[in-house]
Length: 374
Image 1: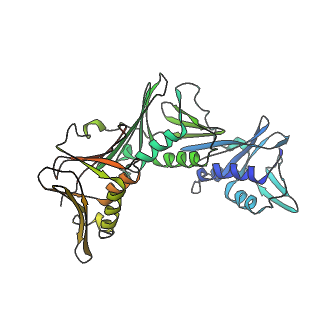
Image 2 (image 1 turned 45 degrees about the vertical axis):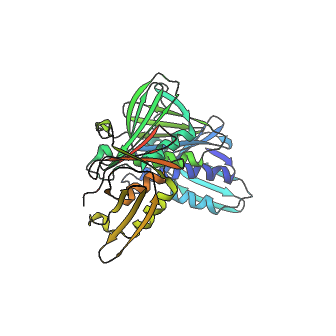
Image 3 (image 1 turned 135 degrees about the horizontal axis):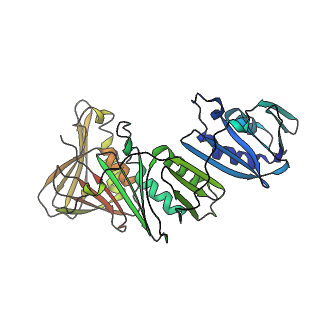
């Protein structure tokens, strides 16, 4: 194999596949990435056996072939090469890789491509198209609520539900839930998938780095895999096995009070009061942020023994009986940080039942937060 390409193009490909390369695997070949020719382009791919990514870059194909290359070492070398000279990469039958650029020359030892795991193709059936920004927004609005408890493994990802023209995403850790929908997919397929948190973060990374000219992306769902196609990039992930809990039971069917809150002002108040809870939330239930609703006023406060206390008052339209509800400040903070629009409708019944937050102008997004019992 022999190819010639520019540094920028090569770095773009390396940055796409490098985060997926396994650094702790007992299989040496998984510390490498696949570098091969495909038609008139160069294909780079990597996998850790759970997730995989592949992309194409431009280059001159002098001789076809393929090799797996030590990923970290190769990336470090390419990063230091001159911007001005083209890079020649050559591999022979002994798996020796020669890198040449200007006056710089390097030799690395690769591993035969025959030893690299086969990465599946994007599913030709059971796929649909969605706007890139819509998909990324849905992931951001749910991913923060995913459980980090490995023993509750079915909650360690975002739950996708495709119902013909509708895409839903749900995430919960048992104490809060985020639910978002998008209509107008124009597809007839149906499917469900629990996509792991690591895969969600990688998809967001790839979308963020994608060419701004790309408007639509393709999503494919099979029995045990989810695939995302973003232009020349294909990302694949195994799914979390198991049955996602009935999230609809968690969403309150009705609430007794509804208050319109400024997202910006409420977020600022919660951030201020969170300074007085510190790291105590995991061990000290009294380190909650208190929402005290009284006629025309909301007082958000916190008080921690040995640390201090504080409060912020906000004018609101509320005519019910005074009520105090305690929340984990991080839960409220993360909801508001991922909410579009200037106002949110905060709905509740009492200090023990779950509260809901939803953007005033967006009927497709809803968050449920359980109060803390103090």
